Length: 117
Image (cartoon, helix red, strand yellow):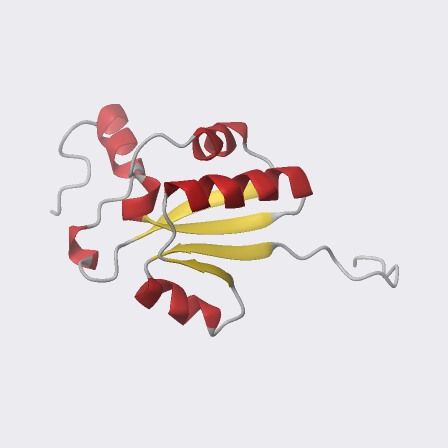
């Protein structure tokens, strides 16, 4: 049984960057939302998180996560640690979304690894 020290556990920040429609849904559950964020906003938010030392779960709409080169996104994805970054499917076309991990699974297990059947 864990001991009680009387101090509150450290809570991670929930940060969402994406289209306004997607981000507004997360605002309802108390997420820190950056609606209609662009690459510059993404870098600014990630840099601030890295310097703050706060634990965070960052949810990025896939179009933003794959939009191009982002030094802070690349750094934090490779660094690991207190900031976890994951993608969300785009709101208007979730069926078109394929997680980036699918490519890794196919490279390791073969091109038919994720095929139904």
